[in-house]
Structure formats: C-alpha cells, structure tokens
Length: 373
Image (cartoon, helix red, strand yellow):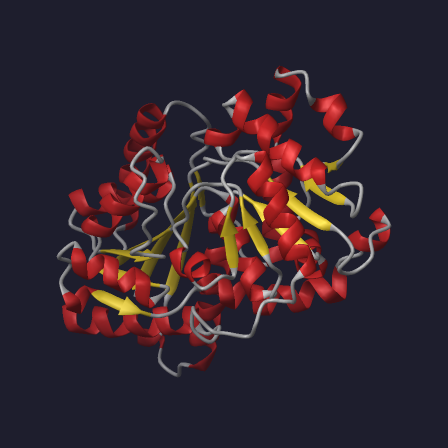
C-alpha cells in the first residue's frame, strides 16, 4: 500500500511524524513484502522558513520530504490554487493508494481536492473539528476537507457528533483519538532528556507563564494585539511571562510601535525548536495561546490554559474547564490568568484516546485498502 502524506505547516510535520513512526513499526513487524506500507511525504512549502523546517525534521527524526513544492505565501486563493496544480502533478506521477492530509491548512484542502478530483481516496486526520466561525479560513478548510474525504479520523466524541450532524456516512467516520497525544507522549520524553531551554533562560519549573500569539485575527488588528499583550503584562510583575515570538507577531508589534514597550515587561524570545517548545509547555505554570495545537499540548501536560480567542475547535476542553476562552480582552485575559494561577493543576481526564492513534490509523487504512482491492 502506498500512502502519500501532504504537509505544509509545522504542526503537520509533528502529526505526520508519529504516523511515519507507526508505518516504520508496522513494516518492521510484517513478514511479507506485500504487507509493507510505503509513504511518500510531500511538503507544500506553506511554512517555508528553512531554518525552522530543518530543525523540525531533525528533531522529529523522520525522513525529509521526497517532494518540496516551495509554494510559499500568498492570498488564500492564490496559495491554494498553486498547491492544487503542483500536488496534482505529484499525484499523477505517484498514483498512491491513499492521500493522507492533516488538520485545517490550505495545504490540507489543496491535497484533498487534488486527490478527490483524480478519484484517489483521501483520509483526513483531525476530522470533525468545528469552531463554528466561518470567518476563520481554517474552518472552511476543515469542512470542505471532511466532505471530500473517504476516511475521517476523528480525535474526539465531539468531532464525531459534528460529522453525524452534517450527514457524513457512519462507515466513513472512525474515532481514533488524537495523534498529538502520541506526539506529546513520545517527544515529551525526548524533550526531558535533550532540552536545556529552562536552564539557558534561567526559568524555574512552574514559575513562569508561556504565551504564544500568531493568528492573523490577533496580529493584524492593532486593538486586539495590544489588548492581548496588555493582558499578559498584567501578570508579568508577579511571574515571568515568556513569549516565543512568531515572525508575524514581531512584525505587527513593530508596525504598531509596541515592541520596545512590550519587551520591557515580557521576555520575548526567538521561535524555538519543537523539543524546546514542549519543555517550555510542560514546565510552565500557565499557558496563554491562540494556537489549537498548544491548547491540546497544555492539556496533555496538565497545564491550565487561557485561550486568546473567542471560540475554539477543541470545544470539549473549554466545556470541561481545562481551558478558558478569554478572547482579545485585556481584562478577561488578566482575570483568567490570575484565577488559574491560583487554582490547582488540571485533573487527570482522558478526552482524546490513549496515545496510540497513529497505529490505529495505519490499521484502518490497511483494512480499507484490502476491501478496495
């Protein structure tokens, strides 16, 4: 069975990495060449920072992509269109049995559409997520990808219920858990052994707040951006606040003349590698983020999380009290940080499977392929 995996953003590198490890594990256990799974990785180039890409693949210890399309940035329509054209050429050449796409980026949608139009079955990892905010390009990507896919790998019961309500056939939906749980377990242990980021930065375990801000809704709106950092600065006198600064966010702070003011109160650092980021997450007292992936990692590491958005695709985390939606309201952010800083740690509850999602995905793909041939 030949699988073509399409990735384009750093969170997708991580999700694909644990599936690649599961494929290696599968191949090492089979006795017949006919049972081997071949994976071809295609990197669209949606995230094209070569230094960060190199660090990610090195730390994840996975094969470099066979194809690097180098699409780069652009408007949503232009970027997706260029990806469609380039991915189609790869699919025509490779003719895989399955195309595997991850999450909700333009790379996800382009891969799903290109495959569907060539009648190559698509499997979507992280299917069924909904924020119910169609102004988010990610929400449009999620919905369209789900309805173009043959197999939908849902991370939670909530995601499954969303797909049922949208009329997706039950046999296409598989509740498998979350591949990011696999990654947190596997790479979290590696981070403990290899990362020295806390010592380098002079940070003490559970004595700092980690923040991440990168979404265009927050960075492109000066009022929202200032409100978020004002809320973070509220607690910076009591506890250090560390923010690995996304290039978009740095440019926005410079644009609004806020970089110097913010840097006096908050420890702004350059983006860090994956293992260092995991260590910063694991050892933080609190996390404040607008990232979907970081919300889940906070949960896996049992670190309370303040979400810098008005909605989240990880609805069950907010409904269960593991995270708090504070939006871009400085008072709400400050209040949430103060409250959660004084509360106990997140209780031990499983929402997204037991950390063996990648193996289950490979098993389901093998079964589905057997029924097709």
